[in-house]
Image 1: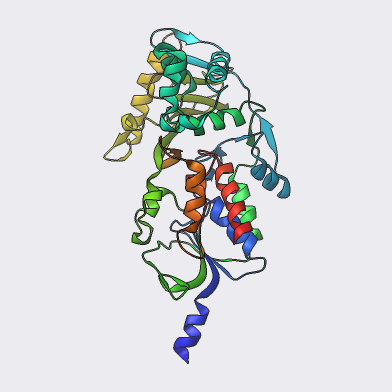
Image 2: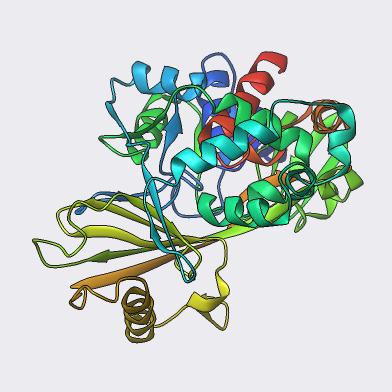
Length: 389
């Protein structure tokens, strides 16, 4: 009798693995009428959404676009505020020096490379497509000006769809930080939440999923592909259809008035990748997928070495400015920054097939979405799963 009661206490209608915004959204919505358990490996919810307080800045996801309807809906629901970002982007490289308003060049090149869309474009990367349309020189300049390389590694079909969605409207940030969205969602859910729980084993017996000591008829998995691969239950070729792209963000605080007063968002061919001034001497001094120069033994450089590295970079980029040492500097490494569909992959078919691997098993999250690299990708897939479940 005791064993039976103990099993009942550990049985749920749904188990959600992963406490990023996709998993939290599923838990929040499904717990309105079902018994739901959410398991999260870290000591906090939010996944790649993480807002630092005092001073406030985004360690993880930083922006949203006008087209991100699911995220806008949540911001409205929780009465959060946004403000628009300037469209201006300047660029610095070793050959041309400082190039102002390179965003106009980017827009022109993207327009030329996205006006046609066909199925065969799935068979090569967006970079290969750009070389066919623009030639090598303009393609290289476009990649450098954009500040992101992963968009060009994605298959051309999915990359073009992404660029088309972003062609109208603009980008925004939240006044309160995206961490406030996670806080409000947590307060709104009736689900049972277990933090610091790394899932070790999953099995399916007679229509019931066992996840470690817990049981449920339905299982929702919201993990990035690197985490999926650590669980033997999920070894399937469908999970090999996306690239995993790392990212590093480095923030620094300089004395006010700051040396970068009045400078816009900048991209660069130097290792910093992107430089984004924020406010009151605070700046994202590096934001890049090229993480190796900022790492030692797989971790961010020690503070002293990091300061030296950044100082050398800035001296090369701004030789005529006198730049003081920062008051502090912090680096944040994301081994899984975002994902991209590989070439040769039909993303629409993958998204359908992945939901039919096993009865009652659902997948959602940015990993297998149409909107890679954005919170919206996680939410659009979570909406579909909640509706289907």
